[in-house]
Picture (cartoon, rainbow, N blue to C red):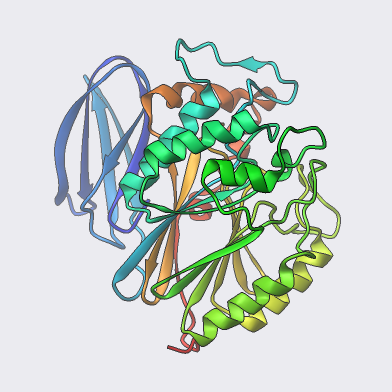
Length: 374
């Protein structure tokens, strides 16, 4: 859900599928429209909805009609100023999926599934209006030069004109590789610097390298002080901060999830310093790969899932004068959605309910504090 749009996911046989959206008072806000569906999973976009309104979505095929009730998000205060998108855990170069690597892509496409999913995410994010695209790590599977070149080709073709920020993940820093991670980032069109930022109206977007090596756990020891300084400087300029990391901050002293993120003790110390420097910070990470939202030291902290496996998503951030809206959108590319649906059965089917998280984890509106200098 967004404030004025919704994405409807469904599975249906081949044939005409119709969609209608109306308010609870039976007032049509999106007249019935019909599309020809090739069969299997599908995604439809609904636009021009009123914000903060409860709506009934009806999807039908033949005599079968499914209904669900949901509510559009409220718009953040003030006019919309910019849009940012994030992609993470692309794993360009991977050929299998699942805990035991037993899931293979057998679709008759020239490009492997991770490439198709990444292409769909990048092109859809740009069509959504993102002027800044952030790669949040694990952009490749093995950190090989050929994988970086493949990603660079995708970005050159489908992200032309966008500002690119990128950081490596643990998969991008294996011990055995034929190119250094910072040179790989340069091959793909990103800056090779481990800490990058760009200033937008009302927002500073920061991308910081949290990956130590291929073992998995992350750290902010190398760049945490610089991030805090950048956040403080943003506050003095009247800007909030969107901080993009690969590793999330652990939620408990004893790691309860795999793969591991930034340790609880280090993450807590960092978040407290960051909140003191600028209370208007949204931290978003990848790595896990799942969709979650919580607060750390008063700051909103989100995890956004992978482009290449269930539910197959990218993150969008609509920047307003007084707040921000996060929306996690599923990849709708026809050559990607079949693979994404297949990967829901990973981990013996447990991945299906685990990865997506709750709707409020994925899509929400957040207003900045009134104390931020302007």
